[in-house]
Image (cartoon, rainbow, N blue to C red; front, side, top):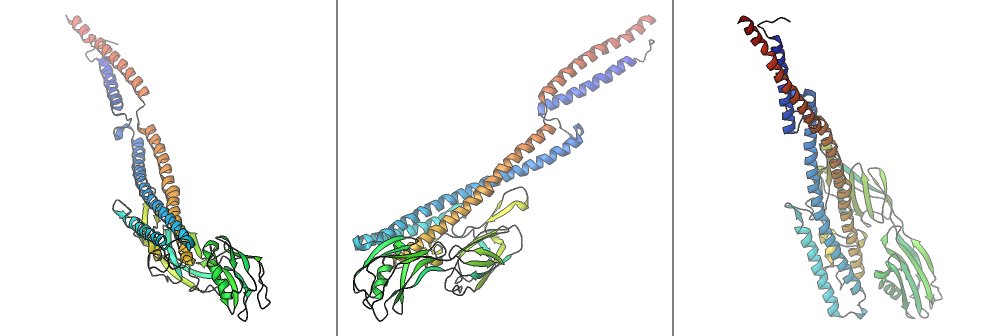
Length: 480
């Protein structure tokens, strides 16, 4: 190439040096920010993918925060329910102690009643004061609403535990298909003609609550036998009744878990020549109800239903639902817009779930075939210790079952909805972070090696540019 004024070599080298300097500047930016993509021009397609992943990460992080708060809220409710359960255990102990009043003074029984009154007051206090972030949890504030009123004489203690994600209200129709039954001996002891026992009689009465041996004196009537059996029904779960001078036994509760058995250990004959014999165990029967046409087996009088995200439970009323002939129906409508504690479990609206937390106040616990509510155990109530300890014990047991069911439902929601959502969202967050890192984060090893390469090329280019500029000096020397 000839010597000319236009120094083409210097211009080419200058372009190369400028390009290398630009690349070095970009590499320095990547190393200083930690990102490969710092503007749209760096990687347009990668920028779109990165922004989409960032939006998903933001939503997932917010969902994790929501679920952690939900988990804390449910933990508060669970701890308070534990205290209610402990108090119910204390009440059960006091009722049991007062049932055997043969060796119990009037003062001791009164002291037991006073303790029960205080325990009931404590339950109501806990229920009314348990709150999270200003929201009360156990007083019924978080209960799922109905659009209409349900006939409480037929459906007792209705508790709606959850509802589906659909926005339209759901009508529930309950119809009895097969009636629940108590265990019964039928006519077991015949005392026709005002007959009486001819000699002492010793009976072993067996029921769902236990077995008790009783002794009945010679000359006792059917009414006396009835009274002796009913005196221990708190221990056996078996009650006696007299109809047309015939004694029959029946379980206090309904369903297949109830049974009645009689073993005559001594005696068993009447002055009129009748014989009172053994009676092998007979069992009650669980009923079947149709809920929106779906057959559901009852647990005695208790009914539990789960379908299409809707879950609820209630107790049938033995008298007003016409269980005697297996007929009767009742309807109510679940409101899908009001009431309940609604939780956002995921990142979109389809992952919302509503949990119903009904009131655990003493006037709301019990019912069903227990015959009364927990608050009726207070002094002067229908089932205080001076009135009916056998029924009081049944009510306490039913209340304990109600509380255990509520705690179990809350625990199940916490474990299988909230905590699993937290685990799933944390996994998603990790995966999304890794995907974003692959697209956007600087590989420092590669970038550092590239920076060293660019530094070498830049220094070499600058040195060569100096050599290329010597061409102008060569032209001047020719002119001189």
